Amino acid sequence: MRILAACGLVLALTVAAAGAAEPRKPGEYPPTADSLPQPGVAKGKLIGPLEFRSRIIAGTVRRYWIYVPAKYDAKSPPNLLVFQDGQRAINPQGPLNIPVVLDNLIARGDIPSTLGIFITPGNTGTEHYPDGLGPAGCTGFACTGNPNHRAQEYDAVNDAYARFLTEEMLPEVAKSYKFTDDPKKRAIGGTSSGAICAWTVAWNKPEAFGNVISMIGSYTSIGYHPATADHPAIYGGDTYPGLIRKSPIRPVRIFLQDGTADLNNEHGNWHLANEQILSSLEWANENADAKKIAGARYDIRYEWGDGAHSDVHGGWLLPGILRWMFG
Image 1 (cartoon, helix red, strand yellow):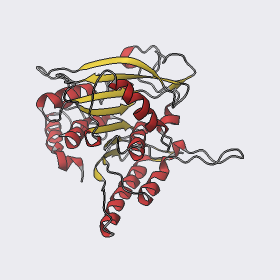
Image 2 (cartoon, rainbow, N blue to C red):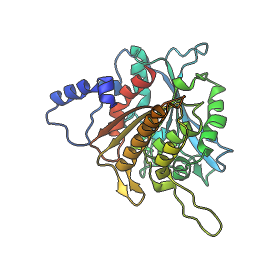
Image 3 (spheres, one colour):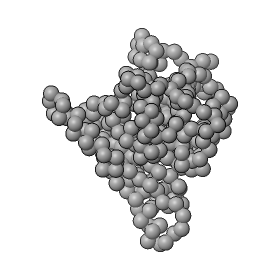
């Protein structure tokens, strides 16, 4: 089912378009009130940037931020949202602006109290995380560029990042703030390579994360390396459709977003790749039903927009996604 039907967002887009001076152009998704600061809304606390050095992903240093919701109560551990490319996820000038979305949805009672963890990819070759990642001369939230270990972490079809997250990062945050242990009340998300990273975490650790937010996901061959005389081939995210079809169903709820004008390059065709993921998930459910296989089924929602490789459409949909997952 498409999330526009599921969450009533058609009305929001219709109202926005009706109030605009000109019709919406392809790829334009103006933010709704859910993604903008609202008067009278209690604001959570954004702590960071904090630095973390991983033992599991050796030689890397990364930054992370913790969003602590207003009225946080350790005696009632909140839901958990983890988002990759944290430097972009928290950018108040960016299309995601997730802390503000959480403020608004929690204040209205649309979702329960939710703690957020926003994590950058790792960077190697430096003692501390570089301050100047991003455009030349950037400062503060303008520095939203990618560290140099992003592809190695996010596009790898293995459990290294999932182990880093569950064995190192979450326990580190839990030293200061409590959050739920229930995978149905935990979500992990990202955009582009951050999206396939989120899926890989849930694929390997469904007992830790039962919800995935995948925006413009890079289910392509970025992580592929051909075999050499010394090493076997390393496969990329384009193998996931086959893995999904030939593996037991995980108890995972997933939302897929992509644009019909997404990338098409040497790594693959992004929109076709997302269509393949959707088809494989749906087939896995249908096959299990037909064979009366007991157990979990994938809970799937999706929305294909008309944009390119951008966070804009995903940011526009995000409030509805969180209502569906946590509401």
